[in-house]
Length: 317
Image (cartoon, rainbow, N blue to C red; front, side, top):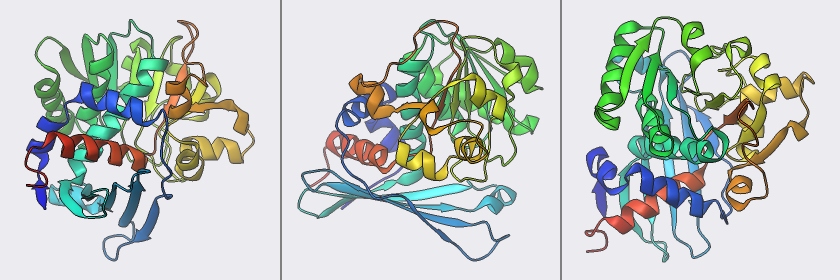
């Protein structure tokens, strides 16, 4: 069985190739079990284990185990860590992948896939909100599908924002300007795309800041009590999700307005499979504000795992 680390995985799954692999995967997505969560002892009681399995129709599959330790920030360690076990079509384990790197890549790729349908084709200014490990890969994804010329990073801690900006520069290349912002309300009104990758419980993005034509990409919150955007963002936007099943169970940015009757279920116009198959219409005009909410799906892990294993000549040898 192969064990592949972060560096190997990045080389085997370049972002443009992963985006196109996801596009094909969502044309006819296989069934996958709903993500399961369980508490982990210790810390402040907010540690979690996530269990995410997915198998294709031929029997090949992948199961990701994710640990979430919010107190790891104090240790200088990633909050989210994971391992991904990959099975062949005979049920044989063939590889163990660095699940954190797979998650970063496939999350960025899923948002980039959505962006290819929902953001303006002339989008040049990307604002990344958040300074965690996921943030640089959101920039990498969006820069792969739109002619981004400037990336602005906003985070609550300036030093971490500087580190994130430096990592984005290393990922996207020197031709794209990367800087940091001291206040989100200064840069949100001039952004073409705003990608939020935070663990915030209270909204950090306000609808009154958005100009016509903005694409809002929310990937940080994955439980009903978390919010990255306020109600005004939701009310002003056309709404899309990665999967209905996941978003309606976990996406606080949509669940809370739904529960309070601010929006109806029909306001969510489609999921990724609807966009790639043409069942849902993406951007219709330059002035629309569109929101995409992603909570992650096991099909994305499976797609990435199959791409990585197929590209690794040592698997099965």
